[in-house]
Image (spheres, rainbow, N blue to C red):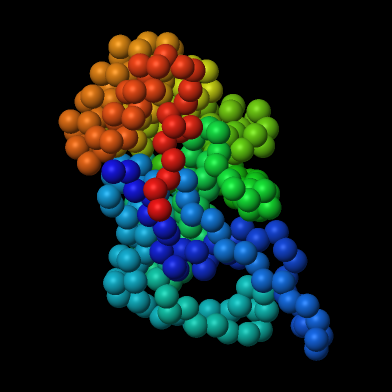
Amino acid sequence: MMTFKPLALACFTLALTACSILPPKQDTPQNATVFAEPELTPPFYPLNPFNYNEPPVFELHLQKAAAAPVTKMVVNRSDNPSEKMTLEVNKLIIPAVNSTTRDMRYATLASPDEIDITEIDDFLQLVEGKARHYPPRFSERQERKGFELKLKRVTQELDTLAAKDNASFDVLIRAFKASVMARNLDLGSIYTTKSLAYAQRILKINPDDAEANFWFGFGLSEGGGQRESIPYLDKAMQAGVQEAYLSAANNYIAMENKKNAVQILKNYKVKYPQEAEVADRLIQEIEKQGRWNVWQVITPKS
C-alpha cells in the first residue's frame, strides 16, 4: 500500500527554522510565558515520487554527505569578518553555471561558481510533501502561511540564479519545481509563466530527463493542459516514475476518458502490486462516474 514516510529528524530540525514566521528569539524575562513553535505536520504526498518505498533524494544526499571525507576549513564569519569559524560538516554543493547535467558534490564550502543548496533542498522537499500537486494539503493554516512566506524568498533566490543564460541544470530544475509549487499555493499567476519558461529551458537541455517530464506533465495537466501533458507523462512512466501513473490517470479523468484512466491504473497495479488496493479504490471511483481528483481520493496512511 502507499506509504507516506515522515522526514528524517535532521530534516525537520532544519526546517523548523526555515519555515518559521516568528521573530528571532529574545532573552526571556523571568516568569514570562514561553510559546513553543509547533512541530511540522506530516507530509501528504510521498517524498519520493520515483519510488514510494525509497527515502527521498534529499535524505540520500545527506547520508552520502555525512559518509564522505570532510576537509575542515577555517573561514571568516560572514556576519562578523573579524571572527573565524570552523567548517567541519559536508554540505550539498551544486554548480551555479556552465553545467548541463546533474552534478552534486559534498564539501564544507562552495566555490565562487557553486552554491550550497542544502537548506533550499531541505525546504523544497518539505513543500513537496504538501504542495507538489494541486490542491495543496495543509491541516494547519499558520503552517501554510509559513511555507508561503519562505517559498517566496526561495523562488526569488532561485530566479536570480536561473536568470543567467548559462545557469546550470541543477539550478533550473529547482527554480522550475519551486515555481510549480508557488503556483499550486496560489502565490500569483506569474509563477505559471515562470514554470513554463523553466520547463522549456530544461527540456531543451535534456528532453529525456525523467523528473522534468514528470513535473512538466502533471503541471500542464493540473493547469488545464490535459491533452498537451500526455507525451510528458508517458515519457515519465516509461522512465519509471511511480507517481506518473497516478498523474496520468488523473489527467484522463479530467479529460473524461474513463477507458484510458482505468487502463493506466491497471498497468499501475501490475507494475506496483503493493499499490493494488489504491488502484482498485481509484478504479471503483471511476466506475461511479463522479467528478473527482485522484489526490482527493487518496489519503495518507500513518
